[in-house]
Amino acid sequence: MKLDYKNVTENIEDFIRYKTKDLKGGVIGLSGGIDSTVVAHLATRAIGKQRVLGVCLPYKEQNHEEGARVAETLGIECVVKNIAPAVDANIAANPELYDTPLQKGNLMARERMITIYAIAGKYKMIVLGTTNKTEFELGYFTKWGDGAVDIEPIADLYKTDVWEIARYLGVPKEYIEKAPTAGLWQGQTDEQELGVDYKTIDRILKGENGIEQSKVERINKIKEATMHKKVMPEYAKIR
Image (tube, rainbow, N blue to C red):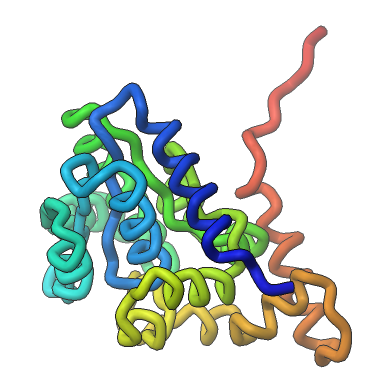
């Protein structure tokens, strides 16, 4: 079923407006990817460019130009904080804990979280998440990293919905067609890591038929294995 883009964007903008009404505004980590770009557009429309702060969080020589360009296009302020000193210090202190790209990637995501929350606290803003419904259902985010935010404006939009909303908002084609990536290690892309393309994943998550069984099983296994990311920690009940 095709979304009513006008109604969807208005609902999300109302949500952002309500959640930021008693604060200075919202902070967004800008990667130049479609999700953060769409959230930045929606937040700017909702509360105005003066109340939205973009943050680019590159590691060493990572390109942050695309994220900065999103901010420039929207007219919002953007700060750049390189996470390399903090990440490298942690690795140097505990090299045996970060001997795989995934372990190092999770550390980078958590350092981004630490930095963006420090900025949000300083300026009395909330952190606007950029996780979409596909990523949320798959648990495709770092626990206490990019999954640690105050609100999730697009978490009820599948990845394919986000692309359509981007077109509705007039987001430039280059952002829509860019291969989705978390940018945590060289050459990483979401679809390569997941083993299934986003259009097929969304069809599986919606319960559609006619999809290769091996792909359905793969996605279901990912959902099951990441269930712990989508709930609060369990606690021992004593009463």
